[in-house]
Image (cartoon, rainbow, N blue to C red; front, side, top):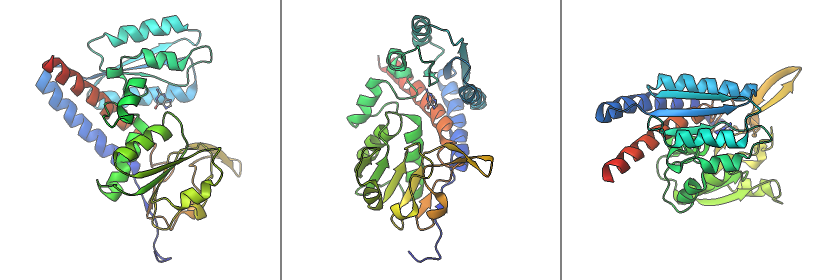
Length: 296
Ligand code: GUN
């Protein structure tokens, strides 16, 4: 690649807007077909301001997509048993097709026990072991929203066929790194996962055609970690102080990535995709439910 070429910005905001429009049109179509309105329940425990903002945004966008939005705000002192009673009620509520319990939960609650209590067919986060297993065995049903959004942006940039490409993922979380690896393997990529204990991370990254970074460390990936012409997906959202001002940056030093073929900026890359994918997953859960109900 010659030095006058500049990496293309992958515009997640614009893609998410288009996805939300498609979801809205599909919601209209399934409403007309079944007479039922897709419904999403979001549960927030406690007063964490960032979580409260997320939940308010989910509510607004759920309504904008023509779905029913059910918000449950519980006090920080809610017990595990009380939360599980609510989850069980949502699990059997026919108006609800998707359930999301906002994380993190207050420290006295066990997030894993709560996630595993969600009906896997309503698990729009894709965090339940049943959905993780379906994805790992190449038969995905509901998949985690952030890696789903990353896959959509990758295919929009590189085309549908990713077979044979070397994808390197930085980070091995259950929410991003692991499901991202499964999705890329399902797309027939050669996949390497590196993490905080990896000895030669930079060397692995330099071999990547597709580099997905979800480490949660501002500026971890420098320009010389990126192969010329690689596609870089920066999942990081880090708040840092620059000259006394607060800024949001990714895990990649964006200013050093000009030799990439394309990169997601932060903000405006992966971030806007997550809620759009949540609503897309709610529609997927609705469709699966109705097809299963028809087949039963
Ligand atoms: N908190 C921040 N992001 C997420 C998410 O994608 N799902 C849930 N359940 N909680 C979150």
